[in-house]
Image 1 (cartoon, rainbow, N blue to C red):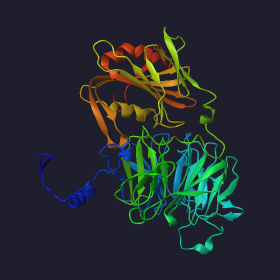
Image 2 (cartoon, one colour; image 1 turned 90 degrees about the vertical axis):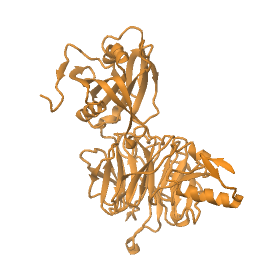
Image 3 (cartoon, one colour; image 1 turned 60 degrees about the vertical axis):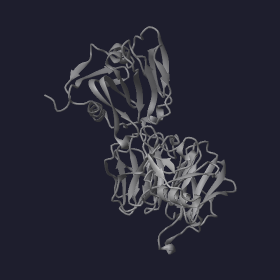
Image 4 (tube, one colour; image 1 turned 30 degrees about the vertical axis):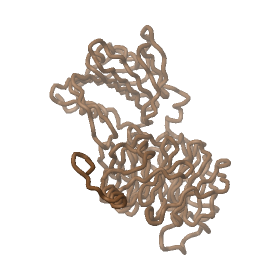
Length: 513
């Protein structure tokens, strides 16, 4: 007899034992994977349903402003999902939008299959649509399905058709097109039966196209923007295990590819199989997102699911076609300097994205690889404190981040009400108006992906939060740590954004007399 997990396992035949193990594995709710896959997917990860009761979901896209959009095609709507899992209609009617994509400037690009056009939304508040193209060589498009931005401001999109009225089609093929930064449209692939999902590699040198009619994934070398060489099949799904597909796809930061078949099939950039991630419903598309860009969002038939990952998703492309009409266009040319008139002694200058900070030499700065974080700074603990303080600079783009009041409320809500201290002040600096939040008490420090709503209790904790309103958008500075460490570094933190204590005015929290 062989001892096993506190009990005993009978002497079965090797064949019977293998069969039994496979049977047990098939019942496990968590992801069962090869060693390589375990390096990508969080331990014991499950596909958690975030939104249900949809007709057919597609096109997940994470906004630089900190929320997710996805398409519910038959219901003619694009749905907005906040980090806490609450959802609402973002755009309705949507023109039966399918594939969605954001650029790093926060502009939204839509494949509007029902309206048969490619469109862009610059302002997410007004949601005014700009049609980028609705035809090729003077004839209407079939039904734009999916898209991928490239590093030079263009985008590739697929134009298949899944309806019954083939007689209404004016294009001779179901093709792949390139919409250049200047608006010119060219057809780049015309030999596939029904191209669907599409991706461009981070370096802009490779184009990946899904061909679900054959269960094949094609790789094309990009020889110039809008020009590709001969394609080759790099993966063909297994008929029994994978069924139809691939449909939508996503990249992680390492260049691994996630394709939707019967499950999420994970491949290397060369098409080598890494493993499969099961989803309760058959997936249609997937994209990375979340505050740390380590959540794989999956649209699957009637629902949206989220899977925590160990690896980050690929970064958003800088921008897509069309002139940039917002103040964000000037960000690279006009960096914001968040520093006071009098710099403290023994400081060093650090650059957090477009933000320049003067911080004490003892503070350790590092550029952040997490989405929306412009920089992270470790502040050494004072004597008696065991943990360091952390200062994080966030930027979500013009109009992003949820606004001043919403973030104040979010920060306050992270502290338990019992024993909580709160002080609010407003002032003016050379960079713009600012709101200063001072909090203390028992802190529920967020950990893990946002949708998991997990936190770690930190006793006798403090937070200083500053929201600086600049012409480029709001910058969020969040400084938290043990009470004594934060108190000792409070003045240096405040000077970093040029606060003026003489001009500051304490304000009452909203809803308080």
